[in-house]
Length: 285
Length: 162
Image 1 (cartoon, one colour):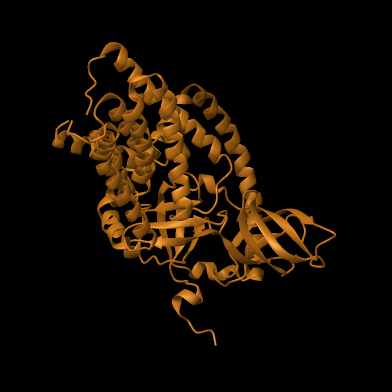
Image 2 (spheres, chains in turn cyan, purple):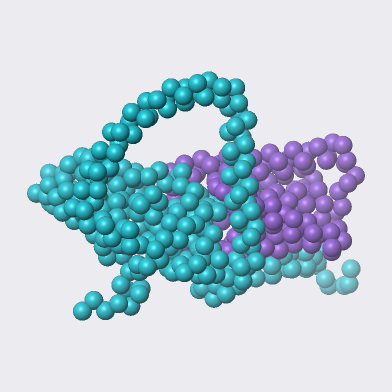
């Protein structure tokens, strides 16, 4: 050791040499996080999404196949019994069909009353859900359609004719959508029976309709549909399950039962010929 | 490890991690970049471990199209803390490393959530999320510690200190 150099100093230098290059990697990571949060890296993501789209489709198909195979394999013993049950059920179903035809006619009358005839005028793009949030922290999902298919941010996402969410981000061949049960989701809605309005938003309890005046007529079983601001008018959102009111508040809250189980959706339809006015630039005056 | 071997390993692990995402395993997919980085640290060389954490994390973030840098940042912090203890008290040579490993994995997951809250598009946590994260931390710890313990028993001379 050279005269005058302390062992402690030498140890510090060795420590710095060991950790220095790793600290640089850490700083680069932090800078990348910051740059990404500014949205500067969108073109990079767009390029990667273009390359990875076929792989996403492959994984999506594989997932479906594995789920189907697992179900068949684990239930093979009960399939024979199921066939017998299905035959019996088939007879019952035929009887039900006759009833349903009557209900269908009633439903057509209701659709006309609610102004839902415009549904048939929508242009729909079918999309498969190919990925979910890896950490499970938000209700956002990736679909296998993007800008090339005519998708734009803000477009309404439907499933079996029911409003389930909207398009959040669009890349060339894929997009991100969020469901209505996302905690940041808000929809101006209306009670299809009474015509009273309110705001529907996502919560940990499901869909909640707020800002309903105490005097307003709302009851369990009422259908809630979109009013027509950010989403097309008259799309079904859910059914009133429970009404909560407080003597200290001038307003009451309704808990809605979504018309579809969001966790089971694997395919959605995007309405491409309706965009919110603020996004499409239509002057309302 | 030779450069081409490490490169292939990083690409394979990042692709595996991305496939966990695209197969929609949601909250039940373990972080394979984290697992490989810690396995390399405890059983091979620390240089390879840090490069795996950095490049593997970046590549998997890039392939899942969000939060670039969050994974590598969250993996590097606990690795650096572990390294600091390792250099001062030779932590890697004591059984205490298993406890430190558990804490390191937990810190990584907390940092990923925190960074996603601050810089990403996460604003709320769904019910049951914390439970699923605890399950993932334990699963990752079991994989890494089992691998390390088996290696120490059957291949005690395999370790190459960097």
